[in-house]
Amino acid sequence: MKQSIAFFDFDGTVTTKDSLLEFIKYSKGSSAFYFGFILHAPILVAYKLNIISNHRAKEIMLKYFFGKMSIEEFNEYCVAFTKEVMPSLIRPKALKEINKLKDAGAEVVIVSASPEYWLNYWCTSLNLDCIATKLITRDNRLTGKIDGRNCYGKEKVKRINEKYDLDTFSSVYCYGDTPGDKYMLSLGDFRFYKPFR
Image (tube, rainbow, N blue to C red; front, side, top):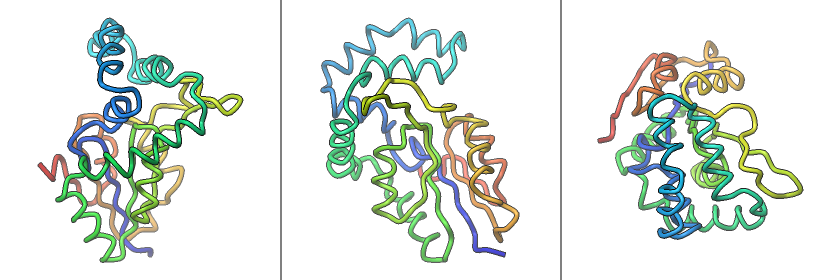
């Protein structure tokens, strides 16, 4: 039997704000950010009314803000964002819990609907594993399309089970903060909903 494993939702659970929205503001500037969201207000309303999926709404916004951006430029923004902005977004209680679990020998995994790029940099700095939304690139440029499914809701459970055999761990801890996390929380022997607020 392996050690314990802990799965943390990222945006809103570990952070105080949505990291994707903050990344868009950082890389594009506040004016372009707000203009883009005003321009796409009908899409956001359609998503809120469940007329279009979370997956589709995210692709539309990703294509608008980052479509055709080179991977090199995007990664440069991700590295800078991780260093300059991310520390101010992290909930101290969440970081304390992550470190406590690591010190106890648990494997800690961030599971997020946000794109994996800046999350990978942050997770690597803390020696954490990462499961997140993957993006399609073509000719070393972003397309705005998601590779597979948006890592949200039931997809989180699917991705976790593809990577880990939970029966081999002594205990499973799960942390989340939205109704979309209830599927992941159901995997846990120990479940924590909005634990760091």
